[in-house]
Amino acid sequence: MSPVITMGPFHPALEEPYKIDVVCEGEHVTDASIRVGFNFRAIEWLAERKNYTADIALFEHVCGICSNVHTLCLSRAIETLAGIEVPERAQYIRVVVAEAERLHSHLLWAGIACELIGFETLFMACFGLREKIMDVLEAISGNRVNYAMNRPGGVNRDIADPGAVLAAVRAIADATSKQLIPVLTTDATVRARCAGVGVLTRADAIAYGAVGPTARASGLPQDIRASAPYEAYDRLLFEVPVRQEGDVFARVVVRALEILESCRIIEQAIEQMPAGPFRGDDYPKVPAGEVCSRIEGPRGEVFYYVASDGSDTPTRVRVRTPTFANMPTARPMVLGQTFADVPLIQASLDPCYSCTDR
Amino acid sequence: MDAESILHMLDVESAAEHRTDGWWVDVPDLDVRGLATLMRTREVRFVTLTGTPDTAGGYRLIYHWDADGALLNIATTVSAGCIASIADIWPAADWVERELRDYYALVFEGRAETPTLMLLEGDEPGLFSRTSAAGREIDPAVTARDAAEAERKES
Image (cartoon, rainbow over all chains, first blue to last red; front, side, top):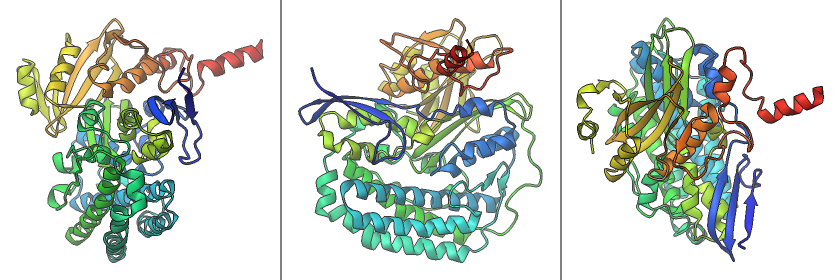
């Protein structure tokens, strides 16, 4: 009988609870099953018992890393239902904060991946760069995470010092293009650990419904910012990096290139941002109806469904987080791989169990 | 393939409504496996599945698809608590079907097994339905196991 090796629910490399049962023949994985739900919080159930104001705060806590995408997606759903326009300045501010969050998320992931690969120096470099964008987010919102920026009808705060944002973003873009990307793409250690490892084929990426960088590293050019632009994205120029290999290396490269694209987007948004109000005066009354909202988070497409009966409390809020879509792809990725590569393959998804266990 | 072509192939074009968030159509007698197969062959991406209680005591299931960037929402009604599974056609639907069983005790027919996803192994499915029933508005964080433990201590 083949041995089953259980990793988790507490794993030393990924400080969030999940469990993967790996079946091995010798050193190679022949099957795997993933178990989540250890921190299930029933946030969707809670949302049906809180008003929209309280729900914005509730959904900020779906995730610790990409908290902003959840309040943005929910705010957009409420705005669509209520038929309210968001001031143009607020649209640009939302883009700046969303891309800053993507930078912080991708740099965090790159650092952790480097640590897993055994590249401590690059881990320190990534976290050093991440501090720059964390400082920007703290200066804008007052917080390093959970920024409380979005509200239906706009944002809660203006960007007081756009020059500081530009300076930080230009420093990150410079270091990423001159240091991070050359090392990540040419270093022998990185290539040895990542190239050809944990392949997700294009066909499997479609079948499993992969989203975000995971899908784009498997040849799928899907990005909600480009395919269904929201906020100010239709007025900003950016590329959607896509790789065909589907391996860990492709996922590393896609995220690294996306760091540069996020810097490019923030620079344009700061330069184009018009003067004017950044939120509406009144908190909207939400009429009866149902609506879907999608945005492109750091890990991929975030999906919200909101149903209203016209009261101040939604009758249903459904959240499909990117990790919920991506996590099952770990199974086809690890099949046939060596057991030692399982943690890195799992990490290459940039999984978030807080998001998954809503 | 774009959303309008899909709606035409499903012969539900006239019933469909285009809103700011995408296309919506209600198909009460939807052949979900036929729909899933069509979407698979046309590479129309499965986004997710939303389940919500309806006013008639049944459930409304909305299959969300991405057709060339447009969101296509195809809703159907589940009156007897069961509907065909599409997880063998779309592995992407596996987790969400298990989650909907956890929340509403919906049965997805044709699956070899439907293990819990968010609930603990052995917990009774239908947590949201159970805790929302009249007079039983309790915190879903109190699991069946917690309740049994509390009952044991009381006795």
